[in-house]
Image (cartoon, rainbow, N blue to C red):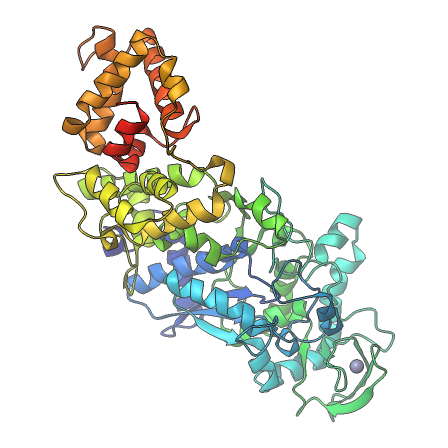
Length: 585
Ligand SMILES: [Zn+2]
C-alpha cells in the first residue's frame, strides 16, 4: 500500500513531498510544513481552478501520511478589486457594474443569496465542494487580514523599500518586447473564463492586463493602494508619502475624494498584486505553492515575486511547479449557452469525489487533461472500476496504486464510497429508461445479478445519484432513450421468416436468461442458433453482421431507433412483460 511507504518516488506526489519536507526542514526545522493555494471569489470559481488547490492538497496529504504536521493555506483573495460583472450569474444584472473597483467583500451578493456579500457567496460553493473532496485547509480571508492590520509591518516595510521594488519591476519594464510586456502584466489565472469545447484557455481576465503594479504615478512609485474613503473604489492615486510619519495622501479619480491617512494605523488598502503575493510567501513561510502555466514567462508575477521576496522581504520563494490547464469536455456548449461556467460543484453532481480526485492524482501537474461531462464519463468510470479490481487482486502497478490510494482516502480517513459500485454506464442507462422511478430502478438493479440481488437503492448510492444527475443534466434530449408504449405493428408485420424466428428465440429464452449475464448470452446467441452454430461458436464476419442487424431490429422495436443502451441492460430496464408486448408475443 502506497501510504505505508515513505520517500518512495512512486509518483509525482511522493517526489514533491520529498522535496517539500527537505526544504521545510532546512528553512523551518520542527515547524509545520506550509503549502498554499490562492483563489479569487470574483464569480463562480471555475472547475479549471481546482488544480490550484488539488496540487498542494495531494502533496500536503502525502506529507501528513508520513506523520508531519501540514498547514495548507487557501488564501481567499477577497480583498481584490471587483473587475467585471460575470455573465449568466443568477440574481445579477448590469447594475452590479457600479461596484467595479470595490473590494469583492464590499460588493452585494447576487439577489436572493443567503450570504453577506459577493465574495462570501462564491466562496461558499467552493467551500462545500472542497469539503466533499476531503480537502483539509486553513482558509485565510485577505479582507480580514488587511483590514485587521495583520500585514501592517509588511506594508510599511514595502513602502520604505519602494525604490527597491520599483527597481525589480523595472528590470522587466526595460527589456520590453510586446509579448513579454503582455506576459509581465499577467496575474495569477484566478478565473478561467473563456470556455470553448476543446480547452479552457487561460483567462483573458482576472488580474490581467490592466493589473496595476503601482507604476505610472507622476508622484513616484508606490506599491500600496488605498480603497477610497468615500466611494470604496481603488481608483485612487497616492500623491505623497512620508516614511517617518507614515503620512499618506491620496486622491480618488472616481469621486474626487482626497484625504490624508497614517499608514501605521490605516487598514483600508492593499499591496499591489506583484508585491502582495511575495509578501505573503514570507509572512506565512510558504514552502510549496503551484501556479498556472502562464507564470513560466519572464516577468510573470511568480518570477518577479521570487526576486521581491528575496530582495525586499528577506524570504525564499516557494517550490512552485507550473500546472497545465484542465479542460472540460461536453459541458462547455451547454454551459456557455447559459453564460455560466462549470464549477467543482457541477462535477461533483455527476461523479463521486474519489473519481474527481483521481483525475488530478494520476496526472503530473504539467500534463493537461480533460474532465468529462459527455459520454466519455462512462469510459472514465469503466477505467476507474478496472483500476479498483486490479488494486483488489494485487495486479496493480505501483504508480497506479498510489494514484488510487490518493483518490479514495486522505490521511484523515476513507472518503465516502458506494457499497455496491455497479457500472456507471449501466446505472446511467437505467436512469435514462426509468426517468428516476425508484421502484422500477430497484427492480432492474436487483435483476442484474439475481444470485446476489440489491436489497436497497442505498447500496448503489451515491454513484446511482451521480449517474441520474448526469443523464438528466448533461445528456441532450435527442440522445435520451424513450421506450415505446405500443408495439410497432407495421415493422412486425413486415418481418421475414428469419426475423420472426429470431424474435421467437429471444422471447423463448427470456425467462431462463433474466439477468445481465444471461441476457448478454441470449442476445448474442440468437443469431448463432439461427445460423446453425453452437452457442459458444467463435464469431465470423457473417455472424457479426447478423448480430448487428438483429440488435438494430430490437432497438427499432423497443425504442424506435437504431441504437440505444446496451441491450441486456435495456431489456432488464424495459421489463419482461413489456418486452413481450413490444416484440409481438
Ligand atoms: Zn472615491
